[in-house]
Image (tube, rainbow over all chains, first blue to last red; front, side, top):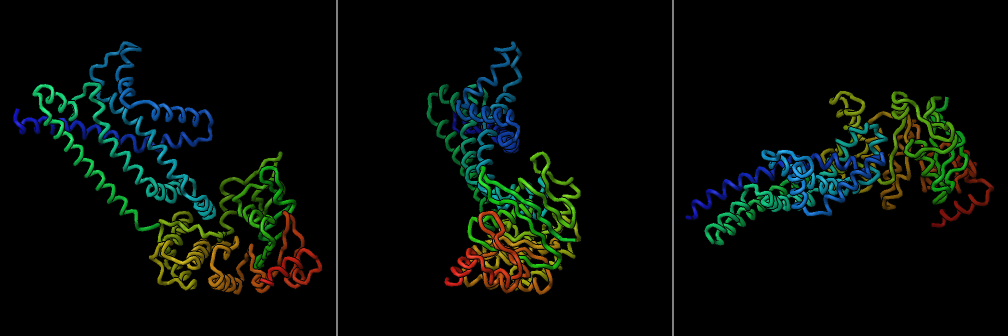
Length: 215
Length: 252
């Protein structure tokens, strides 16, 4: 197999990698906020439930979670899981990452001094205004470095879906390597991941610079 | 009618009484200074008055309207509309300024009038400019808080409080976080406000300042009012504790 063909197949796989990456980010970033609100809810039942959820998401391997999301409907209820693979992947990845993001948001919000809330209260900002105008912008700045870390990890974690035999770049590389008995596709895939993450880190740095206008 | 009435206010922290049955009132145009040693409860009293802390006894009235009271040992507050009305009566200047770091000086001052009071943007900006000039910060409108000195930040926070046009202003040790040579510029701003008959309640360690600017002084210790009266009354008081306190400070 020529390098050209390999590249072509890997690029197609990379499209799937990107799909999982962007969809997971799109779902888990806002979902993390929802999880955060559950985590700090005054309703004990809620905050405890969310605490347990976060603990499980962080305490077990993502690969295992993906297998459970995918196979559980079949094993438990005999459901046909034929066309359900991508849904299971996005569900598994998003819920897992949302747990991490929720904790990152929490640390970012807890770092905001109490005085900010008091000033907002004295100036008669409503709860919503306080959150959107005072808390959220400051939280965003606080969490950017940690979010960058998570996002870079997510790029690499997309490769875990090969355990569900989902055809993305890593699975393609593995297939070609086995069929052609060559190490080359692994190097190419590695280069893809590396360049992708290089771009991600660059983009996040731009965001961080944009938030540098205040301290 | 008094602008503010505090009646038999009580407050504890973890079973430890911090404010034990304190009553006082503030009249329109009056300047009240609250002095006393650290831990005497004066800041807590101010935080109760500004509704940042829940009281555990007594009641608070603004312009004769109940702002906080007790029912079955639970703190009660008026309904939303009236609470808003009461809240807009007063402003508070914090010890640590508590400016919004992500807003420019101008936005710190104008955001609440525009977003909360829904006032006309142009008018608010024009007023803010006047306020900044008054504070000697006309050239700092576009600066961010971190670019300002402590004294400048505190002046911005005073402008921010004034922009909402409150009937009275509370100051919680406004110079305690500042270098001694900068305290003067803040005290001057407060003096200027006094000349305009702004109603003010000032918690402070600046004895000389309290004596010069206040109409009335409350001396607090251990959660109680020890003496209150005109500066002359308080500073010439025979009370030994006050003599000690004032004496110690004037030695510094």
